[in-house]
Length: 190
Image 1 (tube, one colour):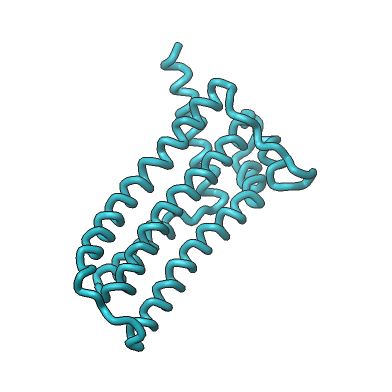
Image 2 (cartoon, helix red, strand yellow; image 1 turned 45 degrees about the horizontal axis):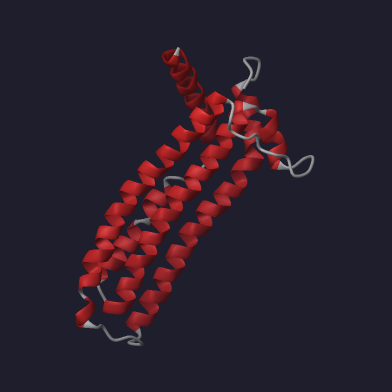
């Protein structure tokens, strides 16, 4: 982002790029909650009998939820760190505009800020998908063995996914922080 670029300009240019990410995060949340409702309906209507031999699944699903919380924090950090290094080194590809007027056209005009916006999208989708997988595992466990704990954990995993819900100002602030980090890393490497 050039020094002449005002933060409001960045926010405006990010709006068409943030909208698809908002839809993705909202869809992940809706998928988990819809599946939980279906599982609850199936179990409450007695359409599935609990299998006591599968009680170990509750502990496996709980462990998967804890692991997913850690991975959903560490993996996006690693993605962003690698992207930041690649951008600083000049090896990160610019977002290619598919057609004039596409959201990626606006990103390619932003230079490093546009590349960071792509890294933000990627890291958010990966982090949310990891959590979604753990939520589904817990809900399936509830469906199979009737563990209410698994259902509660599966539904509660929606909260950290919801915390990832983006807004253009939030993404712009994040990009600003990443640009400062990139500048600091360049100074330290000299």
